[in-house]
Length: 441
Ligand SMILES: [Zn+2]
Image (cartoon, rainbow, N blue to C red):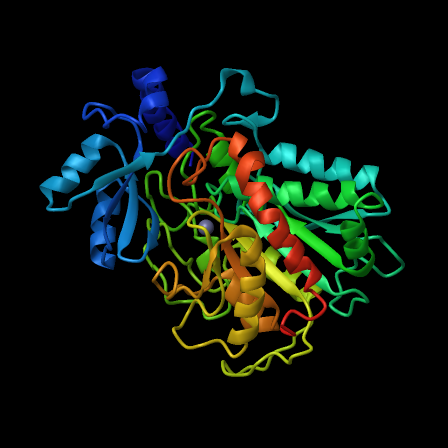
């Protein structure tokens, strides 16, 4: 763990020193072959063996869709890949320009909140709005369970609080919309979008009629940072955030800079068909829900949402089922509906797609299953758990475009307020307003 951070820090330090201001124009100019700058490259869709080969070489696997895979590495690494017969094409710089004036206490990379800042801000919102918000510790991060620092995982409940509201009991008076972000730590804009959603609801109560109506009738729960240990690693890079996706559990093997379990492959529903290689970005963990962060989110979802679906994969949740769940990821501009683990059509497919389409009317994202969008199956994902285990109408948002100043894992901070939040604000509102009857069409 420690060695990993030091190594990554040194490597990235060289990047900064060597490129400096030149990074500002890298998108417009052909990439300098001598540049050690981290870039995203596209290659034709990788087989699992090819992906493993490129990961072993030092690439970070980033994203897949259609016939294409995105891999992250510097130009020298791209040359090594070419020697192996691959043909990586430059797509984008990983790091966008950070305005020098943007440095603020408790933030990194131009304004993104650290985990400690999220915790302080959550507490402040709950303290200032006792009638609208209550903060819940839903479990521990892996490092905390090891006595090595780490964090609690926090959820905030937002509603006009009446007697019996915001209790972790699925038999709630109000229907519920639950949202998580930054389960994949490096998908940093997702936490900020979740944060703006919290602010909209708290600040809009009593002044915005739509928000007031929603808060009077619905409980909205938000986990802005589902993988706090991972986000600490990301933020440790400062203006050059570390590309940490997984949690900080390093017990499964020595992986250089690729430690951890992929929490979005570790859920207990349909677990076990993803990578068994601890060094893979999609390592599924030693067993279903082996990770404390996974357990925290699953226990919390079970405590919020009634079980409305049978055990059989073909059992549909009833038309009058309640509650909606969204997990925010990046990137690609998709709204992904279950199933992820199989190409079989989810029993509530029509209802899921109808609500997906209603949300897409706001953000313009493409609605479909894994097969329709990223083009691969996944097992042990949170959205399959929420839908498969509980019958909750469940979605993955992949926010932001593939490339450009607001694209990739590390969009410029200004993009959060310029595009990523505004384009998703209406979609989250649509999701929350559907919580009473998400499959009713
Ligand atoms: Zn993700």
